[in-house]
Amino acid sequence: MTKEQKEKSGIAVLLDFAGERKWLTYLGCVLSAAAQLLGFGPYVCIWLVARDLIAVAPDWTAATGIATYGWWAVGFAAASIVLYYVALCCTHMAAFHCASNMRKQVSSHLMKLPLGYFDNHATGELRRIVDGCAASTETLLAHSLPDVAGSVTMVLGMLVLLFVFDWRLGLACLASVVVSLLALMKVMVGEGVEFIKQYIDASTNMSKAGTEYVRGIPVVKVFQQTVHSFKAFHDAINEYSERARDYTDKICRGPQVVNLSALNGVVVFLLPVALLLAPGEGDFAHFVANFAFYAIFSAVVPTAMNKLMFSTEAFQKADDAQKRVRSVLEAKPLPVSEAPEHPSGNDVRFDDVTFTYEGAEKPAVEHVSFEAPAGSTLALVGPSGGGKSTCAALIPRFWDADSGSVMVGGVDVRQMDPHELMDQVAFVFQTNQLFHQTLADNVRAARPDATDDEVLAALSAAQCDDIVAKLPQGANTMLGAGGAYLSGGEVQRVALARAILKDAPIVVLDEATAFADPENEALIQRAFTRLAAGRTVIMIAHRLSTVVGADKIVVLDQGRVAESGKHEELLAAGGLYARMWADYEKAASWRIEGEKAAATPAVAMEGGEA
Image 1 (cartoon, one colour):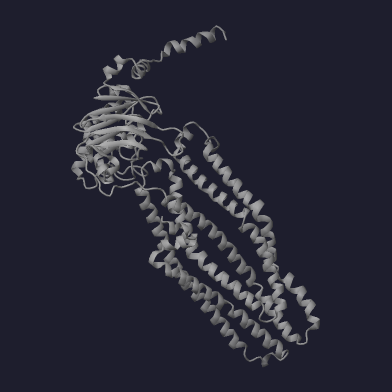
Image 2: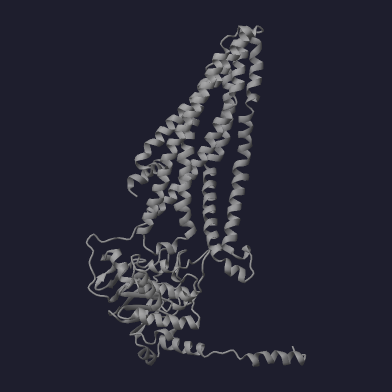
């Protein structure tokens, strides 16, 4: 987003999204204003009818122009409706174009952001920005903006008409408008604006927490918990409820009572003034006709003011929406080299790499250096929080290193074309997402142009033959809602099939056996063997048995390289890896002695001992 765009008002920024159809918004506002002016016509015609009838009373037949005034009133009303309809057609076309462009631009910009951005921004929050903000903007431009133009025109026209016939009665009607405006200022400015912002923030937080809660429902149900046990969602609901209640009680209730009483009680201001003026009127019939006009026209006052009030609220929400959209568009995209370099091999090298997450006080990895030659397998191990996953994520540029270099084929990944880098690296996450598509299409996501035979070959290489065999339509079976479901270990094998189909020369495995049972782990290990053949593999694992055969093991502790070498070398060194291996062997040999454990309490109970 440019400096010029930042300096524009919220409405101007939103209209920029409408592009070449921006003029339709302006045309719609002009037509809406004209429609409101035509809407005054029937009231003037009614006044003319009242004037003629009072002038000839009690000989009503002498009032010959009544029918003409009636047809004029119908014409004004019909013209007002038609113009307003055309106005809304114009603003809706511009609004739909604006919302569509906003979604496209935000989505396009999100595609340019580092993958790590999505780890720091919840799905619910991004969904609300992409979809919710566009929807509120659509409401603003399609309805609120033309209504504001019409409302402003209506108020200005009303002020003119109030003083055309009898300025004294006009002032009486205007007094209700002044009281209403003073009440609305309490809601729309100052503290009221801050409350609106807090209310919208609370709504966003509740949406974000709600998404996380829905995803965690299986855990909640397994442990027989309630929504109150899911603290984030519970607190978000309470915060939203509190903000809504505070806005209603502390900001809106008093001013709104005064506002509605003043607008709907115009006669309270009008009637006393009329009674005071009536005795001194020389042309009493003309005065009565004027009073009739103001009594009828007073119905316009609350309509105009209510439209203005609700339009202002829409402006506040739309301003908040464009700020949230702007926060995404201002996020720095992944830098792309203007003269990208091409890797000359498949080796991976970290050269004095330091990286700190946004908002963190200390680096996640600090001065890390290691090398994985082409075709070798390098394992990253160490205590939790040591920086293993961070190192793995720096290779495909989830983030960029603060200092040092991450190099693939002798080229800094920041100097490579992002598409070429992604072609070089296949990433198997600790948790993998399957789409609501067929099994074959889920695998084909790695390479959309792959043939059915290539997909089946990848599934077979990933040890997925049993999965294909048990599904009703084989690889063409739909997965997810309304289809088949796979276990965690089976999902991991499908993810490996994706990586095999992609056929990238570098493979990063982040805890790929974390959720696998022993049977699935054995199959996954076989798939690893097939996947690793001829490729450079960076493997992260807590189960040390899976990295024993690695060409090199790098031990990370608190973001630094503690030691490195082969399995036997590290054991002989007696350092951190040796201690981790001893703990692993101890844990692997741990057993539950069920009979002894069960018998002891039974004997104690029979003996009556505590």
